[in-house]
Amino acid sequence: MSAVRLAVRDLRVELGGTAVLDGIDLDVPAGQVTGLAGESGSGKSMTALAVLGLLPRGGRATGSVRLDGRELLDLPERERNAVRGRHVAMVFQDPAGAFHPLLSIGHQVTDHVRHHLRLTRVQAVERAVDALDRAQVPEPREALRKFPHQFSGGQLQRIAIASAIACEPQVLLADEPTTALDVTVQAGVLRLLRSLSDDLGIATVLITHDLAVMSAVADTVTVLRAGRVVEQGPRFDVLTRPQDPYTRSLIESLPHGGRS
Image 1 (spheres, one colour):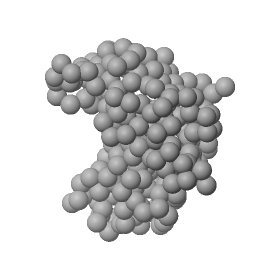
Image 2 (cartoon, helix red, strand yellow):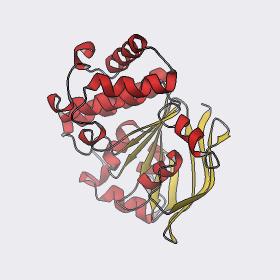
Image 3 (tube, rainbow, N blue to C red):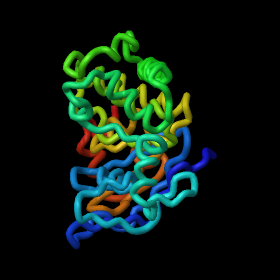
């Protein structure tokens, strides 16, 4: 069994006095892709934001979020800032929105590497080139000189993933990373996420409303509905023998009822 990198227990989140997460339990082992599924508003993204300590203004999280045994919810903001990007990184749905349009890719990828790892400029550039190469970005050294608008959506998402893994985090949160991409490009990004977990031992949380995407790469699947876990287990069991009516309805909404 792989070691559990991220352990979430009884996670509850309130926004303006309204409960949006109600007792989430989740284990994210090293070297595996843990799927978090559910329709819009089910609490998937809010779970990731709670892990990172990036809740909307007025949000309050209780319960436990442990990274390699270290409690994150109680950390002072300064220490939480040191965890974000270095130990827990996130890839967002819109790759274009993840980058400043007027700064080069090199500037943006190396900036947080230098901050977290205290590297020289030259060392940070080499680290960025290696990360871009791992993310299968063509001509990575040349890519550093370019600006976000010079890349396609799929290439930019690979660069976002490269930026996220540049500091070698233990946990990668990928929030709907393929939604804005066409089907062919989606497949490449999903293969990349799978290979990063396999090759680097990263504990990956893949957040998506699309169970077809989940079936391609996830080791385990947790299904959320209205801020609660309704089903959890190995991918094959959840997708072929769902126990909860909500999970069954998600699968039946897929073409061919989830079967090829």
